[in-house]
Image (cartoon, rainbow, N blue to C red; front, side, top):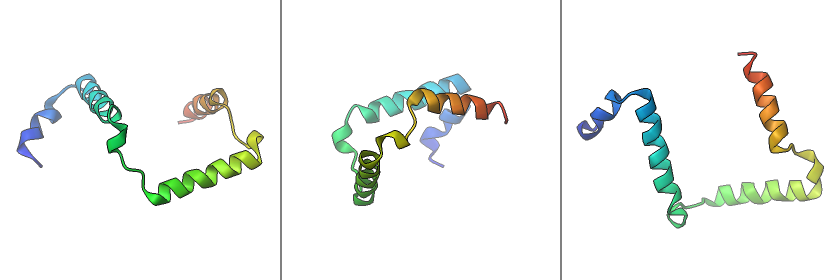
Length: 75
């Protein structure tokens, strides 16, 4: 483990979550530096084509959230 970062493991949970959020925000602020691999582009194209063939086959975000809420109560 890099000794420069060992202090990170001493942070509280909320501090660690904030750090992760801050790191993610810094990455998201430069999307042009994030490469998309060919296999990812192919998968996206395949999913888009499937959606265009049958737009009603998916679920709305509200439906997905509700399924997650229902299933998380089983855990």
